[in-house]
Structure formats: structure tokens, C-alpha cells
Length: 235
Ligand code: ADE
Image (cartoon, rainbow, N blue to C red; front, side, top):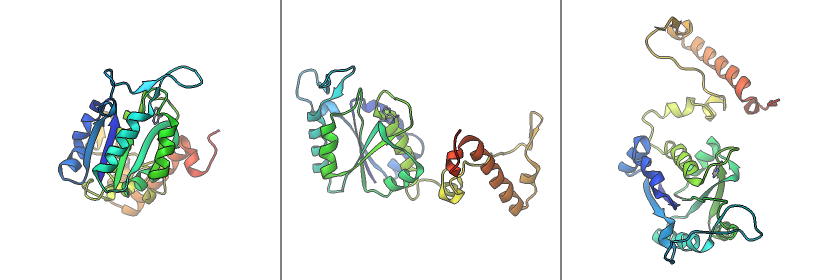
């Protein structure tokens, strides 16, 4: 998979060289390029933002650098581009979206800052590429960089060969193999730690009983913390 990231803070993406994503890059599963949006500015101050038409607080990212950046990325590879635009006004990011994005050949992350990118850039992109506006949640970050990191990590770990044991993808929270429940609690050795014992059933060797216990705990947690996942009301 080809990943391009465009940001005025390319240094945010240095940690992608670590851990599983770093290994996926080293193994050639992921081809990552991080681009500084200021490359496509032409004034002495490398300006990327301006005041909003209609007034109001904050700044808006100018369309010209974004237009040039996306044209340059399109010209650099024949792979079809899916543009991912992190914004608090986007669709809430889910595991299902992570699977959808993991099936694409090329993702381009357009990281806005301030009050976001001039809407004409998004409209222009919609006519040429697949565009996915994603929100990490109902809170406001300073820009799209941290959200892009989260989406990249969620997507790359789904690519074939990235996770050592693919069974772990089936069991985790929000996976379909887990009926979209939150994951059950996990324990490891020692059997007793600070007077707290591991639940007996997990030491029983009875796999049917263990599976039943885990499903009950998963259901209990989900009902308590995320009743919306069970189609129930939060109230
Ligand atoms: N940019 C700023 N806030 C964001 C959020 N909650 N999700 C995605 N991108 C953002």
C-alpha cells in the first residue's frame, strides 16, 4: 500500500518509523512518503493560511498550495488516490472504515490546521478522487496530524502479514469475529498478584467454559460502557 501524508508539520510522522508500522515500511508492505505542504508555496514566508471570508476567528488553509500538492502527488504515481481528510466535521472513524481503507491501493492524508482547508479543495477533490472525511471523535485537536497517525496505525495493522498472529485481529474489540463487542479482560502469569487471583475458569483448561466466560464478560462490559454497540440507549 502506498501512503502519502501532506502536512505543515512533517515531523509529527517520525514515530511511524517505530514498531509495527515501521516494520511494515521496512518490509515493503507500506510505501510511506511524508510531504511538507510548504514545498508548494511560492512566497518568501511560505504562507499556507489566510483569514476567513465572512469574518470570524481563526485562519483557513489557502487552496493554492493544496491544489499543487495534490496535482504533484497524482502525477507521481498511477495508483488511484483515496484522499483522507481528518476533520472534527467528518464521519466518525470506525474499525469498519479501517478495513475499507485497508483495501485501497493508495491513501493520501491531507492534514488541515486551524479552521481547516478551503472547502473548494475538498469539492475539487471529490470530482477527481475518492474523498473520506474522518473524525477521530467528538473533540477538537489542533490539526489533522494526530488523527492521521491514528488512522494510519489502525489501517496498516490490517494489511496482510503485518500482525504476526492474524487470529488476534478476530478477537479484539470492534472486530466482526467478536460480534462487535468490547474485548473481555485478559490475564497472564503469575496466577496471584498482590492478593488478586486470576479467575479460576481461565486455569481450568475447559475451552468451552472459557469461551462462555469471555463472552459474558465482553457482553457485561459492552452493556456498561457502550450500550450503543448493542443497539441500546446511552441514557
Ligand atoms: N482535526 C481536529 N480535530 C479532529 C478530530 N476530532 N478528528 C479528526 N481530525 C481532527
